[in-house]
Image 1 (spheres, helix red, strand yellow):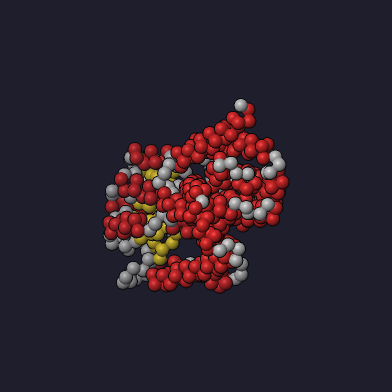
Image 2 (image 1 turned 90 degrees about the vertical axis):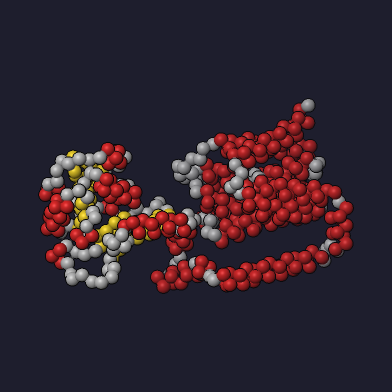
Length: 503
């Protein structure tokens, strides 16, 4: 929810309590919840319209009474859009002050403005007089707003024009992403435990990177890169125990299929990076088209996908996109579903491959139809309670292992279609996906082993190569066309596979 507080800069109290003038800007800025106050606006011309617009832009539900001998059509149009605004086209009366908390005076009669100001002071009301700073108890500042972030600017009544220019400059300089930062910080703050000082220390640690100097950031990145390089070298040394460099190079340089798998991994990761789903579906239909055993296909997919899912889940968690309650609800059922699907496929894959492939083709056909419907479906912003999340995760994990894909299209799209926030759905599902794919790959390894390790290597190399391209193209290609393309590809392949069963 965006901030609806109206910034006021208090100049003085009522005339009877007004102290001697002081040098400099002694204003005290206050943000009022204007919807809890009653405001009287005297004046229905251009200046009155400006004051009314400023208040309603910040506090659309504010209760405002407009009194003027003549009310402009623009004010009438604006009032028609806000039921809490009342219009009285008549001269100002002393009784108009009754029942109000603030007074804004914007007529073109200076004598009348001064009289209303004095009468408001007599009733103990703070008043703002247009174009007369000395008579104002408060000023309305120029406002820069980025979601829940609101910055008010005041020049102590000296130059509203300068304040507006500063507003325009800050509006361009401050990025729109600041609102997302605030939302993340709000979630983090609500989860922190301890007293006030402990919370402040924790928030300082979280935001420390924002205040880093370029040199500090550079050394931090160097340290991170060095740590990743060390982990990579360690992994290579472990693999070298089982495979020698000549063996690996011989397979890579002579195996034509390695490059095919690398191309499949590149295409699958490109689609997944653009849509947030589709890695398993694309790799499944591509590898099964090459005639591989269904169990080997799924084992290869999940072993390779585990790397991408781990990196994706880590980044979502790091940037605060994970809803812990949703993550916990998805984790165990998803793992159980993945293990059961992998175990069942490993037992049925060899003996009943002729029956399993048509079943998987029909399943992928349904996924293709679901993907295409997402291209034409308007997002439903109504938030409804999602029931049976555990069963959804279990089904998603089972179908993902048994069919080689479907965790993202089934779980993510279902949760989002129920009105859940996409940011937290995608983050939570992505983090859970790492554990689901890890459990699936471990089950395949324990039951049938990784006989097609060159498939895994090709998918990993292709996926890593496609990752930066997917990140660069994200948001530049129409999502609707991408959904249509992937959905049609899945449907065409599925129909082709089913044709062999019935004809």
